[in-house]
Image (cartoon, rainbow, N blue to C red; front, side, top):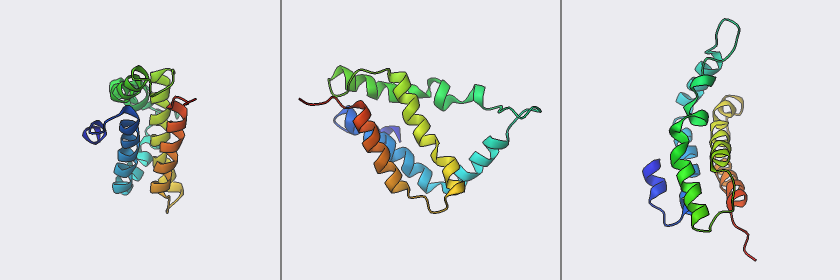
Length: 131
């Protein structure tokens, strides 16, 4: 997925490719993602608290660095508005990670439409408004 997003000429194109590649990966591994969600939701301590929260690298760890890099380069090149790259990266990641639980709830979840919606949403959230 990382290689696919790096082949584009602009950070905005890279961000679109990042989102599309992640959603496409989930779509091509639906059953595995559903199983991982079930495991994650039931991986709790004796008090019912998640054991994954302190370990969740997609939200709290260094795995956000490549996404933050895309966002930072977009800001430096004047393509994106100013925002916290960490907050935006966490928001993008959370929107992608929200797909897993939906797969169990909505059997025919339209992932192509979901990807299009996310691309448009984060394009609007990041894009510098042209006067």
